Length: 336
Image (cartoon, rainbow, N blue to C red; front, top):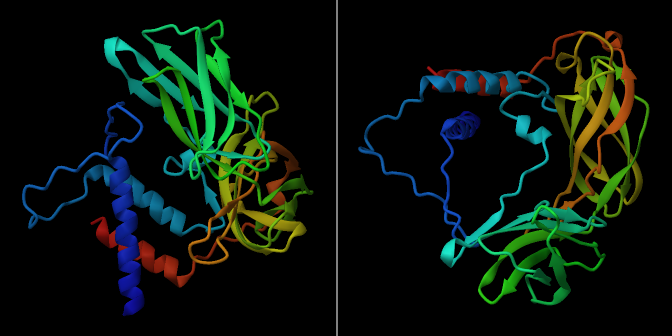
């Protein structure tokens, strides 16, 4: 009974996330460095049952399909497509008097050594000759780097600060031209705990395509690994099509370690293809409660894995476990 209650609560949480994702986005005012989340409008009557809109049927069906497929090998759908793309970072926009607007656009939120800290500054309503920048530790306010920027031919100010091994994890980047005219963005900088050394030859193992990866591990511990498998079936394609999201957990020792990500035949096409690896994410679980999560070095560019013929795989259908089947049943009941 306790298991059923837990599964029901988990499924309700999944349903709430799905229905929430269907709501149109709410634009937020660009009026400073900290923006409060929008406050939901109270329901007219708490006693009334809120029924999911008809548009929820398709996401519920997609959730059910994911639960019935191997958890280590999920097909790319509209629901998880964002996981195959580089995360976007919102610009910090600061409106001032007289129609002046400063916009500070970091290259990303989380940087990893040896990546440089990059950003672009756009100023509407004034044309300062120079823009000053300062990179500081959020915790201690220690100045780590500073300098001046001149506008490029397109009127934008671009900065690139070389990464350092002693950069703290929490940073703040300040740009200004005179007192009261500027913007501030909060960033993260991490010393990588692991990174990809090289990829090894693809191989078939029963119903799975196996992707062996050799990692260079700096800190031992439990790693959660996720990557995107891209396929290229036409040599004239400009980019590989994201086909599946692969993931697994591995207990790794410091040094060189080989792990295996797997793609089930159900997420692969029937015809031979060239495989590509992208969006590799390495996360080291905190060794104790309250400790920080460790992050691996991201890939600079997709990595070619070579060609593969899926006809070498056993086409036996995947058999979900009893827990997955119970969750699907509960989702179907909630969708009625």
